[in-house]
Length: 401
Image (cartoon, rainbow, N blue to C red; front, side):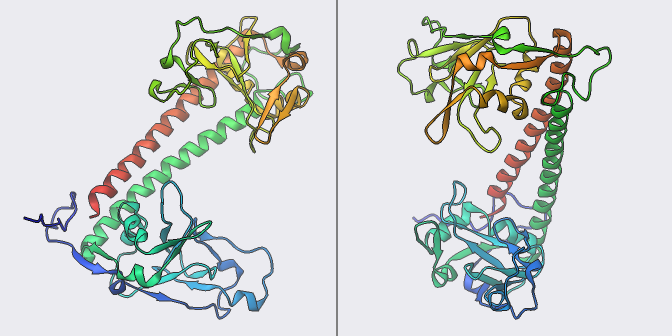
């Protein structure tokens, strides 16, 4: 006997018990092509991808402005770029106000009673909409194209308006909480960036702008070769796959995901306090970067040059110092040889000849402790944010059907 499909979600608010109604999108939305009659200027151009007003700085002429589609509150627009989260593109609802969007976006307008917040989340939920879009899109080179008539034929389960409002309010409150914690995290990261600028000297200066009480001496200029030595410590077999370190993220990788068959001979030992050069460059690190080991002894690919301290040091201090681009970029500029489009190689001899200003060990420890405490706060806040996002994901799965 064929099992009847459940027509209500796993989790509901008190007072709601009936089945959700099955509705075709053609009974919920209609496709609209409302062109801009110049009632909207460039200041009302909406970014569909991020849902905010993104004024066009270029002075578009009237003829071009008339090509824009009007996008009103409650309308949904199809954005066809696929990603790891959206296999066939996605719908985005306008929750910010009337405006205009590029003519390349298909716009659909609600034709029945609806709750704005509920549909913001439902229409964007890949768990349900992914399957609907798979049945109503065609693949193109860069993105997916929506076949409107096929989309409007698709059916979904819809609660009554009162339940829509209840779900919408709950998810909006959860999003507000997520936004609050994201803002706290962003502010902590900005605070750290500010302290990195103030607690380390500017280029050419011997003392930082901000110091802890009791420290007045100028920082000492030393060659990096006086502080570090290059090491090529091979694994003697005592370290295995469970000790494999991801240099870019500095954590021990899952042993089952380690691909190397040469764990004994083609790896370097990286001990706590060692620094490794990671040559991939990006907008934040023009030449690549150094990463300090603060997790414990492990092994890394022989592609990463390893340097070890020769003197007493504070690991947390150096972990931050070697990540400051304004300090390291001039050093790298004199010791890097490019290799390919995405990675640089470090000339160890040239690198160890470069000079850097260093405080005494006690001041290193003071600075290091401060940044360790700040990093702990950032990690804690990131953990809280991740938990909230996982909670939202779980609620979406349980509150929609």
